[in-house]
Length: 147
Image (cartoon, rainbow, N blue to C red; front, top):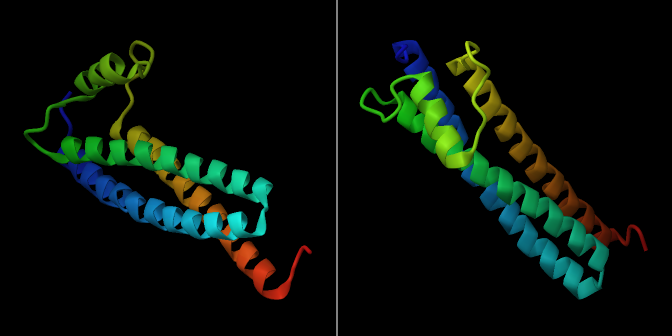
């Protein structure tokens, strides 16, 4: 069954939201540069390791969110390569080894959007935690917290 007009509109809106993920990742990268300077100058190698792990997680999530944004862009197009859920699931299985839903249990557009939004929320959460690390380090440097 081909995507309906409302599913294509939902797809376009989801893609627009997901495209903002690059802003979150950019902010996280900038935060990581500041944390790199703070931790290297103060010799807090444990803090540096933790910040690199958080940034690595945010980077991975940013890649996943970007991929979903590009997929939803294509789903929103009338002339896109995936005219229905079955063709999309086949491509996802063939290229990315994503498992197909069980026979007869097709994933609808709302389920796909919900999955993409979960990834996006995880990206935002990681970036906010990363920002909290920077805030703590700034306060620690300024007011001598944790010494």
